Amino acid sequence: VRVLMPGEAFNAFDEPRDVSGGDCRTAYKARVAGGGATGWVMATAAEEVQPWTSRFVVSHAVPLTSTLSTNEAVEPFEVHRLLEPGEILDLPDQPLKDLTSGSLRARCVAVADALAGWVTVREAAGHLQIRPATVEDEAAARGAAAAPMTPPGGAPSEPPWRVKEELQEGKGKGKGKGKGKKG
Image (cartoon, rainbow, N blue to C red; front, top):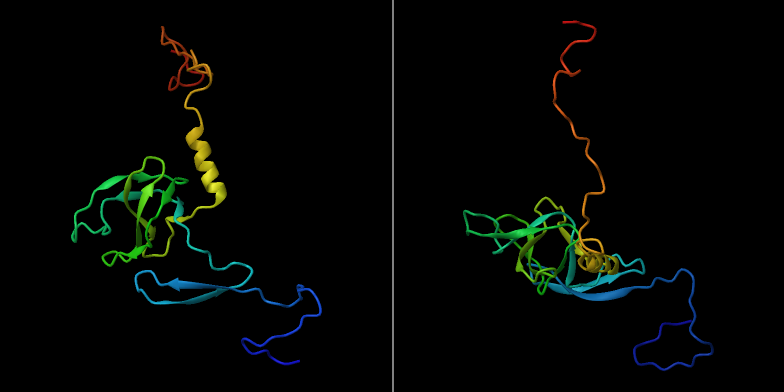
């Protein structure tokens, strides 16, 4: 048994087969967000490294703002609206580090209403606000958007529950009168 050199020919006597104890590795060429350094990242079959996707889902309610910076002292910004958990976002670019707050932020477009702005991906403390969307997340978002606002046949004529109507006519038993006291 010997190590083959690149370009060296060999004759195979059997079809390729899986062997136990072998490590399946995948190599990704990666760039550090904010730093610009590039290199190779290796991942095993367990897929510890996820390939980049431009679709993200909101994990926690987070504001969609007009600028990268969230520090009013540095640059005034406007909050367009609050993104709700489960909402799908498109991120056309890689996230950037906001040097004023230390958080990782990205330019995005909310799929629901096509509103564009900046969102916090990860706070300086390390809490993720958005995460890569799965197929299930996108299906749930499509289902929520397609759900009717009113039941078939229009709005119900009366609510499905009844509230007891309380009348205050004359004296009756009520709180604060005292048990057993006559008067």
